[in-house]
Amino acid sequence: MKSIFDKVIDRRGSGAIKTDVLKERFGDEDLIPLWVADMDFKTPDCIADALKERLEHQIYGYSIPKESYWESIINWENSIHGWEFTREELTFIPGIVRGIGFVIQCFTKPGDKIVIQPPVYMPFIHLPQNNDRELIYNPLIYNRGVYEMDFNQLEECMEQNPKLLILSNPHNPAGRIWGEKTLARLAEICARHGVLVISDEIHADMALYDKVHVPFAMASEIAADISITFAAPTKTFNMAGLVSSFAVVHNKEIRDKFFKYLNDNELNAPTFISAIATEAAFTKGDKWRKNMLKYVQKNVDYVYDFLSVNIPKIFVVKPDASFLVWINCNRLELSHEKLIDLFVNKAHLALNDGEDFGHGGEGFMRMNVGCPRSILEKAMNQLVNAYHTYYENVE
Image (cartoon, rainbow, N blue to C red; front, top):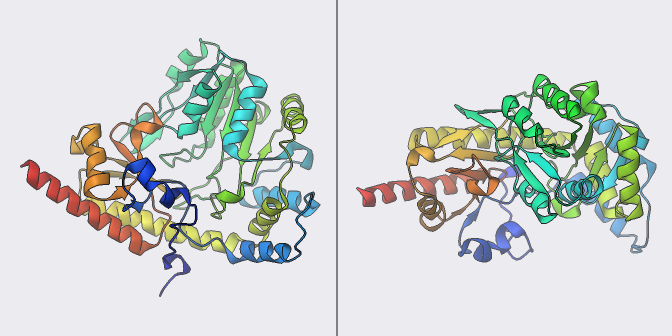
């Protein structure tokens, strides 16, 4: 039976980064795009309908969000994750990456040190560097397809007196959902050394395989007291271009400072478009979300099974959450240049280069499986054909 997620929608020419910068980014526009972290599924009708209704008014002047917008966020987080917070602890931010930049500017100064845990989402690396902050690396431990935090090495990092730690929760690119004990231990170490934690939880609503996401602020009272949490409906409901995110801060001292920074720079007010889309997603979109996750999970299983049989030297790290799949190609024993050549020039696929995620990303590729199955099947067949052709030529 055909699923609504099986429909192929041509995004070329729409301004989509995923399709319209292929030539610039990869040197070839004739590639299957499986890289940028948005999905190729139509955004839920409930969101489109809410936007259409408002746009028919045809006066798009200055506006303020309704109280129901804020209530939808509070109710959603309580319903999905059991996380409770008040309206005063909540604010809008114009994108999580921007939000991380705001925290860096608000709580640190040039030359200050910031801890990240690579391999990790690229802006975690670039934002501190772009703001003249110094990175301290606490690499994750990779063991047979599972990532863990290295707390012994983290203690050594703390000797350098960092001001911030940026946490990816769930982890991007590996899709790891961190357990409550792990998060609580991380919080204890950071609190002991006076380190503020930024928790990026944009993939929190996309848990797979019956996994349960734990908001960092729920891991312990300490975690709640030393953190700023960022979340959004944008990944889950495929509306990243609308730019609608939010921050939750329990600690009043941290909250007052950060919210003042946002208010003073007029960074805390959503457009009417983002507010309407968010409220529609959080009040009417859950059935769509659950069906989407079932489809994505089957896509993950398909890629895992296909590569296990056809290219067993490529190992798929199954994500606990999200539509991003982290694939380990190290057993192919290819140089970085040859690995990229295999995927881009031979298989005609556009994936994210693992090296871009920092230490530990070498020999990996990140694949976006948030697309119709027919696209994924075509991509996998192109990869296996390229693989066999490449090794036949080598031999």
